[in-house]
Image (cartoon, rainbow over all chains, first blue to last red):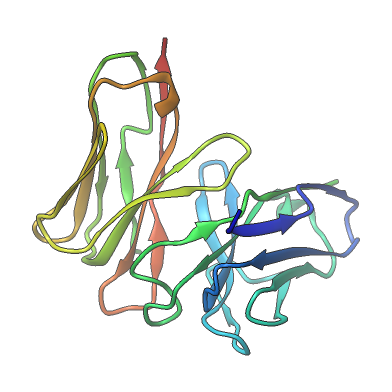
Length: 117
Length: 111
C-alpha cells in the first residue's frame, strides 16, 4: 500500500546512545517532516524538508539532526539520547504548497515509540 | 503565540448520539485539516477546508470552516464505536510558513 513507512516501531535507548529513525514515502511527495507527539503537548515539528536537498529547523530541533537522503527518504538522528527525548515520533509527507507545508494536509507514518532510560 | 484550541478535550458518549467538536484560534488560516488518530497509529487525514464558510460532508461527519477562517467544527451524527479516536485539527497560518496542530479531542463512543 502507498504511504509513509517508519522503522523501527519501538526502541529503548540508554541515555547517551545514538540512533537513527528511518522514514520512506512512495507517493512522490516533495516535502517531508518529523514530528514528536507528547501527552499534553500535541504534535510538534522537529525538522522538515520542503524539497530534496533542503532541510530546515522546526519548533523543537535541539538534540536532533536530519538527512534528506533522496526524494523518498528522510531520516532523523539522535546523537546522544536524553530522557527528555522519550516520545512518539512521526514522519509525514505532503505535496508542496508553499513555505514547506501543504494546503492539502499530510500523510503520516504509524510512528516510532522511543523510550530513553 | 499562535494556538489552535480544541474543545472539548475529552468526550464519552453512547452509540447513536450526536456530537460537535470545536477548533478555535485567533489566527487566520489558509486552509484547515481534520485528522483522526487511533491508538498506536499516525493521524489520518479526514478532510481539508479552504474557503471561509465552506461545509464538507464525509458520510456521518460534517466539517465547517468559519467565515473568517479562524475556526472550524466537526459534527458527527449518530456516533458509532468505530468513530472512537483522537481528533486533531491543523492548519497553515495565512501569510506565514507555520502549520500548527490543535490540542486534540479524545472521543470514546460506547456500544
